[in-house]
Image (cartoon, rainbow, N blue to C red; front, side, top):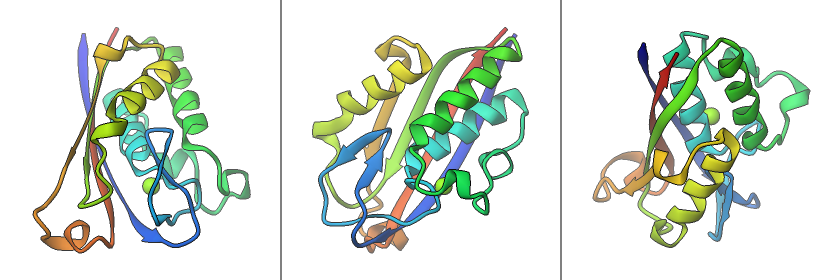
Length: 157
Ligand code: MG
């Protein structure tokens, strides 16, 4: 049986924080605000995986009121979710992420981001897609106020 999940997340730009996307530190003048490391792409992916398994959402599993998750690397949260999904008997088939932002340009980092996720999920890199797009300066991402990310994930068991 194949199951599909979908996730969305958005975080606001802030000063004095590293910009983490898909577990990779991206050189930029700003980072994202959030309780964890605010890796918006991994948060969307986590919700897609949880959605496919019908196991709730990231906010329920890792509440932003819990000091254990303060500044935590979202790669650790992704790893934990992948383990839970495997325990349910699911295998991850493929994942696909779209990151919506005006800048920085992500093209030079796409392969590293795909490899980062593939390593955490135990997938081949060609089962992990990471794409970036702009909104042609429209809306909050267009005004460079933050980053929006979408993800889908396919599970089977
Ligand atoms: Mg988030």
